[in-house]
Length: 199
Image 1 (tube, rainbow, N blue to C red):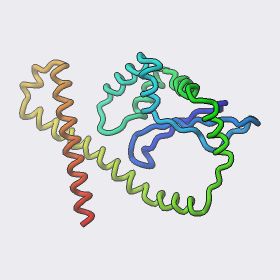
Image 2 (cartoon, rainbow, N blue to C red; image 1 turned 90 degrees about the vertical axis):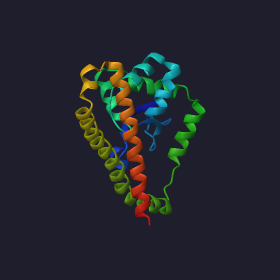
Image 3 (cartoon, rainbow, N blue to C red; image 1 turned 90 degrees about the horizontal axis):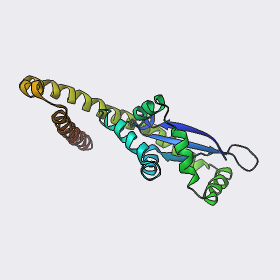
Image 4 (spheres, rainbow, N blue to C red; image 1 turned 180 degrees about the vertical axis):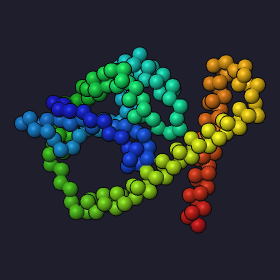
């Protein structure tokens, strides 16, 4: 019933690195339906916690090894694909847990879907907002990275003895504190600038 699976990233639309899997089905006549079933990478990882805990743990390990502010789905998947982890097989297994009746309802809905002018108008209005939204989210992440780099540099200048003797566990704790505080500061500043702009 599944014809193909595609990965879609929200980075260009929303400035956030969230990946969703679009699963396209064939109808009873073997024709691909218009609208895919969509699941997020987050939901797939949640499913793997029970279906394949080893895979779930490994994906978490890969995620923890990527130092980044904000979401990082595509970076995780890039590594997993390079290591030939069967991501699409996991998606198919997830889909197999859904009832045939539920999937058929989706197919029926897709085939009978009609987009009226009012819906198109709302969609066009949303598209006008997306560039600003994507820019705002992207700027926030770039700012966090730049702030992190600047603070890290000054910390190393003022506390060189710590880094001369540091072990991996201490560095991990230090890095967690730094990232948490940078993220909090960026969030507060972002909220402050937004609130000020609304006055």
